[in-house]
Image 1 (cartoon, each protein chain N blue to C red):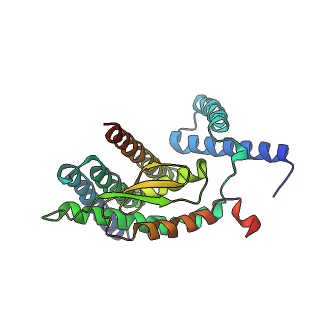
Image 2: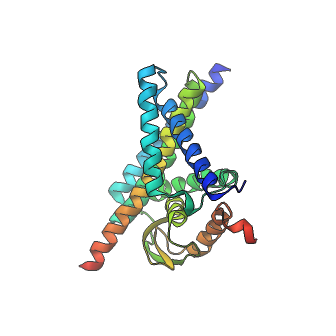
Image 3: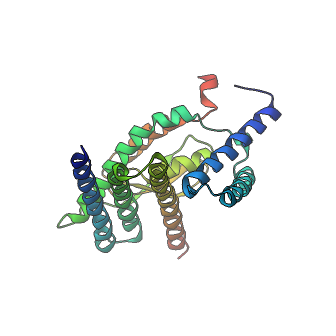
Length: 97
Length: 168
């Protein structure tokens, strides 16, 4: 059973890292601030979700697992909020130029 | 569960304070008395800040309904991340970026902010500006049916907000 869980963890975490890589590749390759925001927020969110999912079976107790989920929720909340704020400030600067 | 307004407010504040303290327990986990005292103080300050930033009268959400949105939200996150990753790794990133105005039904306020946040985590859209009647989204691919997709999300989301079921 623990081997199965370990394999699950490895697969989920590696998949998560692929999405982090995708976010960074998008940041470098996409043409402007808006499209780069898409790359970072969406790919990294999925990356965090997969890494957290992979780590959950390795946690000692329910509280430790909850803390991981909390980290994931906070990352999601902040990236959703911050991406809008950055998009808005870029937009308003462009409009005023 | 609609008590007198006064009792309702007290209840909301008590629930918020309890939730903040529960969050503290999750974050701290040491259960040292000094830390718990600090946690109580922090929860009190957090509750006070939440009253200032999000007054109880502004209408809450139905937690059960919101949780029903969770599977859909997780699925959308998966689609959004895969979509962006596919485009990022493509030899020629296939992008058709542009702005789309979405006529929003939700009034300005906490509920609409939360919808903008959810929509910004969904495939291909980031809220970039807005007026009282519409939200401007930046889209990765304006060839997709962005407005229709957002309307479906807004309907699902609006069901989780409190005021609606009263007249519907």
